[in-house]
Every structure is written in structure tokens, then in C-alpha cells.
Image (cartoon, rainbow, N blue to C red; front, side):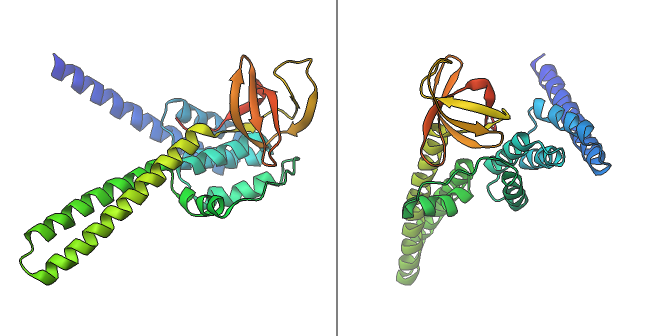
Length: 252
């Protein structure tokens, strides 16, 4: 009975995967034929089935960009880069999409470490850094065994040095993985979807307005109270925004 249920589950998953692939292909065909709205519907069906990928989000970003939908296009390009920070097409198109946004917020100056983190370390997601950790752990273990069983001093010195280097790189990759994971958990990014929204100094409608944001602006979500989100923007300003007017960039 258990074997039958397992087989049935495998067949069902295979059929669902095939249907998802077909949906994705149909959506691509619709996009090529300038049937953008219909293509978006199929892409979003694929997303709803949980079969997400950087390519899917990239295509959704392109589709919304063609419709001049600033918020959704930036949102999906950002999601594509969350899954694959090395997606150059998404990164380039994101630059063009951001030019359509009305808010021109000057970022705070970055420290040397922040620049290194943004320009180098964040080129890989924390999941990809975790893979690097696993690779170096296997490599270090293999090289240590070669050192242990080597029968000549030159070989022992060589394997000792490279295995030690591998373990140092393993430690470095582990620290980076932890930092990237902590950063992702503590810095929830979101995109403003409202055409225009007021940011207030407290999570109530009768509180004072501190600044205004427009569609497509990226914010950092710091806290949540009822239907309000506490946000920070690139220039360091803080405030509260109605939760429904932003959308978290979450790929899970």
C-alpha cells in the first residue's frame, strides 16, 4: 500500500511538473506575440503552483515593464535577483525600470565593508554560499586524507598546506553565509505598489505625514503593527506605511 501511494505521488508530481512546463512555454509564446496580459496570467499560474525560478520572475518583470507597470516590473526583477544575483539581464532591466519610478532618493554613504558586501559578497545568495561551504568541507576533508596517507614529505607538506587553506576558506564561507542569512532575515525588502502613498510618524491615520512615496520605490521593512509596516528608505528616513500599499520581495 505504501509503495502504491509513493508511486501515485511520483506520477502526480511528474504530471504537475509537465503541466507547469507547458504553461511556461505557452506564456512565452503569448509574450512573443505581444499578448502580454494573457502571458502574465499564465506566468502567475506557474508562480501559484510554486514552480518559481529566476527566469520566471525575469519574464514577469519584462511583461509588466511592457505594460508600463512600474511597481510590479521592479518587484519581479528584484525577485529574480533574489533567486539568482548573477542574472545580468534582470539586473540591467531593473536599471531601466527604476528610471520610470518618480522617487529619486539619494542613498546614504556606504562604508568600505558595505561596498564589498554589496559589490562582491551579495553576488551570491546565502543558499549559494551554503553550497560553497559544503564544497570546501568535502575538499578540505579529501585533501586532509591525502595528507594523512601521503608517503613522502613533499606530498605531506603540499596536502597539509592546501587542506589548511581549504578549511580557512570553509570558515570564511561559513561566516559569509551566516551574515547573508542574517541580513536577509533582518532586512525584509519591499516595493511600493500604491501609485502614491503617505508615510506617517506613527501607525495611525491621524498621525503626521513625514514624507510621500510613489510606485516602484524599494523600502526596508523593520516592524509590523496591525495593518501598518514600519519602513526605512535609502536615505535613512523612517516612517509607517499601510501594509497593503507595499509588497514584500519574498521568493519562498
